[in-house]
Length: 574
Image 1 (cartoon, rainbow, N blue to C red):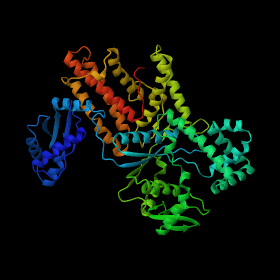
Image 2 (image 1 turned 90 degrees about the vertical axis):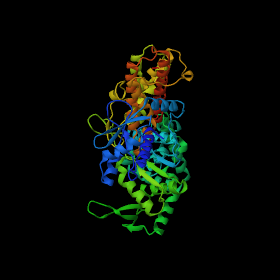
Image 3 (image 1 turned 135 degrees about the vertical axis):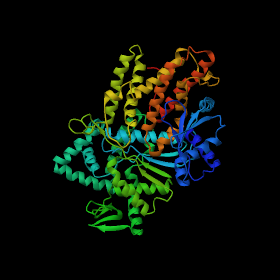
Image 4 (image 1 turned 90 degrees about the horizontal axis):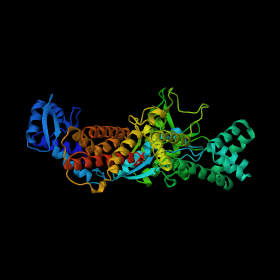
């Protein structure tokens, strides 16, 4: 139970003991200056319900808890109860957290989650737009697993469709020269552009490409062999990006669009049996009352096109059916861009109407904004092409290398390269994760690679500085022992912040906003710096030194664990 919930439960028991049973306690951190302050305001709702004075109710609650040594209570304003935690309570709780390999974070009751994230189009290389769903989704996976949940990673890659006709026809055209084919496949983006240009400019090639779409859909052996080779090459490209970006996805997590091909006729049949299908202009559609256009006319969810082909609606319904009925997930989270909001609302609504999603199952779309340039335009190259994600990561590492070399020129070359990788990749990921998920943000190298402010380099450096305290003094943290003693306000502020770690993780998964954890880590690092400046550690008296070293170690562990849950690495020296 996190600190907030612990206090909430204590206040709730006191409310019941005081005869107030029709309103829950609402305890939250207080904005009051000082340390260890929380506030209970459940009396306001209770007083309104009981038609009495809230201060009078607050007095009844404080009377029940007046002899509790864990905190001091003070009634403020119209009936709020300010709670100040005692030094003994804080010390005991910190000792519990320090003795826990999980920093006091309890596992939740296990539920099964399917997390749909990243989902690149395998026809071309991953671009900068894939940074958001990939990093946000992976952070959610890491945090949910840390909280004891059963998580299935679902990489719903696009590996099917009309665009593959051009790609396969182009592969066939140069397949006689194996060396040339292999070289061109090394740059999938250029390969895609070459095939697309031929399709636009050469009618004979376009006719051939359209024929390859038919061959692919009919399972032509030669066509399937070319397709498999291209897909394998594309998956290799994606995995290289995931590995460099420290993402936990693997090829085993891919459940591609094509995997549902055999289920598409089944979906059509089941929707028909449920009386949901309507033929409109030759297409098989589902019309639901809640979806209407600007003209007030019903919007169709097209399940099968008039030419017999299947749009994304069909494959996404098949995926919902698979995840809900075969995987028996309790909750499915879709980290997909905001422009797909209407589409996914229709998918979930049709799936619910068809009985695919059970009453106790939850399917959620978690949209996100766009990455913009400084002028407010989409982040693209000068010619309008999407910026390759691999190129962005390489540039991040190169820029970080220059900064690290300037800051510590005496660092061994191998160490410089490793630190540059950790700092560069961490900077890109943190710049994404530290923003509100649903807002657009400006991509700025100077901001994300700064060692000042709410950035990954700042937090990574803060962690390194803390660890250097033990390294310089040759102190083995495993040998630290003794009681925690809080004597200064800066210690108490840091203590309360450390105890809030579990509460923060619970807050993150309410709406999967990783920036809540980022802000917490930034504030924790700032509080540590204030503590270290005002409270001598290594020069303190022996008992006080031992206590403060415990606080230092716990701060380092919390920063490390928090960054790890964001998928961001740390180093011991930079």
